[in-house]
Length: 554
Image (cartoon, rainbow, N blue to C red; front, top):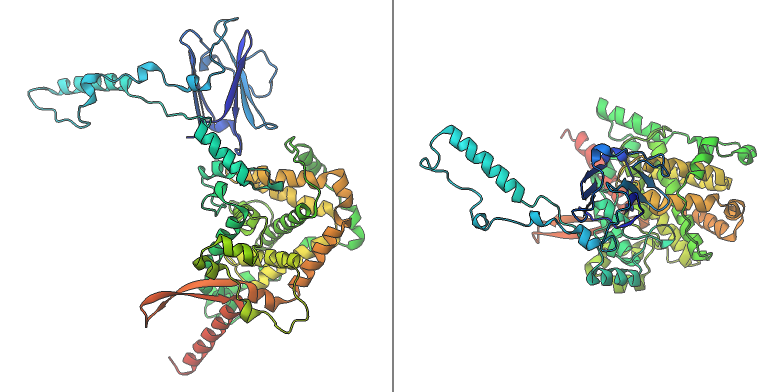
C-alpha cells in the first residue's frame, strides 16, 4: 500500500482533508471510507491512509456522512474529486462545534498507530503459533469451543491489524528525490513528469517495458528498448505470415480462412485517406469533440519553443497516428474500443511503452552507456546493409526519423496478431496521407479518440496524464492551430519521412533481430544477429525445401 500525500485544515465546524492521488483514474465505486470517532481511514487501491486524532477530537461516523460529490460548497458532509490538482477533498463535520483539533501540522503523529494496538500481553509473546490442546486441559466439546472463543476475542483485540504507513519526507527520501531531479529522470510531454508510471505498476501496467522506469536516463531507456525488441521478435511467427501473404502455405481450410482474413486487412481502404482534398478545409471538430477539449484538465505545461521540442512533438504525433491507424486497419475500420485496443496502441508506441522520446542513440553515446554484450544486440549491421557507393551520407536528423519508422515497424512485427512487413508499410502510407492533408482537425480527431480509449481504462489512464492531455491542449491552442503545418520544421520532418519510406529494402535491412541458436558442435547457445531481409530469405528456403520434399514424395 502507498501512503498518499495529504494536507489538513479546519474551521469551527469542519475538518478538511485533501488527499493527493497522482496518476490515478478516480472511481468512487472503488473508494472505501471509515470514520469512527477520532479515526479516519481512506482506501483506494493502491492508496491507504489512516489518521488518528486525539481521543477527545471526534468526527461524525460513517452513518452520518452524506457522500455528495456535486456540492463542494454545501453545508453537508461530503467529498469530491478535484481533477485540476488531482486531489480527493473531504469535508467532515466535527462532533463538537468550535472545537480546535491539534497536531494537524504534524502528519507523522497522525499516522502513528493507537497505543492499544501495540499492547501484546507478555505471557503470550513467546507462545508458539500452533499449540497442542491436551485432553486433561479441555475435557469436552463445549470446553474447546469456549476456549477458542475466548482466545479469538483476546488475541483479536491485542493483534495489530493496522497497515504500516510511511511518508516520503525523511532525509533519505528527500536526498533520493533531489538526486533524481538533478539527474533529470523525467518523461512525458515536454519531459515534465516523474513517479507517475511507478504508481501505475502496482496496478499491473503491462504496457510499460522498462525494468525501472523512474530511474533510467533517456539513453538507458533506448538501450533497454532496443535489447527487448531484438529478442522479442519471433522469426517463426513472422515467416508464417510472410508465406501466408504469398499464398504458399494454404494447405487446409484453416489456412484459407487465415489468408482471407489477413488479405481483407491488408487490402482494406482507410476512410481517412479517401477524403476529397477540396473538402479538407471544411472538416471541423464536432460539438462532442469540442466539449472534450473544453473538459481537458486545467493544467498548462510551458513548452520551450525550440526546434528540438518541436521535433519530439512531431515524433510523438507520428507514433500516435501510426498506433491508431494500425489498430483501425486490424479491426477493418471498427474504432470502438475493446479490451486490447489501448494495450496494442501503447505497445506500438515507444514513447508509451518505453518512455522513449529520443529514439536514436548515437554510436559515441552507445559506447559509454552499454556493455559489450549490449552493443552486439543493439549495433546495426551497417557493414552488410549500407550502399558504400551512395553519393551522400544521411544527416543526423534523418537518421532519427528513419529510426522512428524502423522502431514502429519492428514493434508492429512483435505485438499484434497479424505480423507482416507489407501490412505495417500500408499503415505508414495511411499516416503519410494524413500528414499530407495538413489538417490539424483530422489529427486532433484521432488523438481525441485515442485519449478516449485510455480514459476508460483503470490502469492505462496514466498515459493521458503524461502525454495526451498536454499534447491535445498544445495542438488546440489558437496559435499552434494556425501555424503548426506552415512551419519549416514540419515540412522538413514530412520530407524526411517521404525519403525514408521510399526504400523498402533499406528498411528491412535496418530491422535487426537477434536469436539464440544451439550449436551442436560446441554444445552452446550462440547469438545470431540478422535483418528482416535475411529472415524472409530463410522463409523462402524453407518453402523451397518443402516443395522439394513434396516432389520426392517425402
